[in-house]
Image 1 (tube, one colour):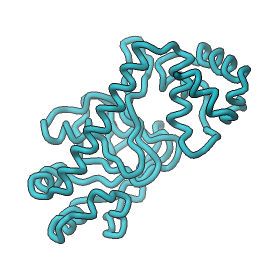
Image 2 (image 1 turned 60 degrees about the vertical axis):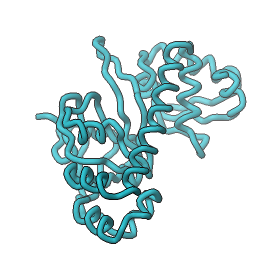
Image 3 (image 1 turned 120 degrees about the vertical axis):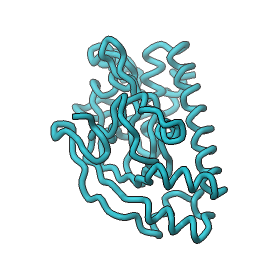
Length: 239
């Protein structure tokens, strides 16, 4: 069975708690605060919230896209799988953001070109039907701005990823990954194998790289977690 946001193999997680989106929940998306009264009503009637278990597959390459996916809580990881079977992260959709590849599929009526799974925490996603989003885009300047801003930000992320892949060694890419995903917290609940999946390498190689970085005093390693001790040293590695 192909995975979708409404039907998932049990082994990959589950979807539960599907419900209509409430007006107060639009505060997660400030760009949509300027919707007209009619547009707001149309969006709310066309949207539903879906709650995803950690590491639940949402889409895979070749799936049809059910709608626009707006993340309220947690994150969606968009990634590719190489011919050798290795994964590599393209980008994350964090709270207040949407998946631009899914929007492109809605407008171009193409199948999804990558894989999507929820991050390592419970994830809440507002799903707006494709037909409703296309109509809102044609009539609502707020939706147009939201879409163009999402596109511009994602293009920057993808260009950064291409630059890192082309010019960074693995140690730099791992350091850049840790900086990007740590954000406000200094501790990451993540395994070496998961980091390997993000950067397109193997667990053994990533473990060696992490031990090297740890010896510099930039971070400490524990089973299933990494604590950043010195952000400055990580930034020096990246720069």
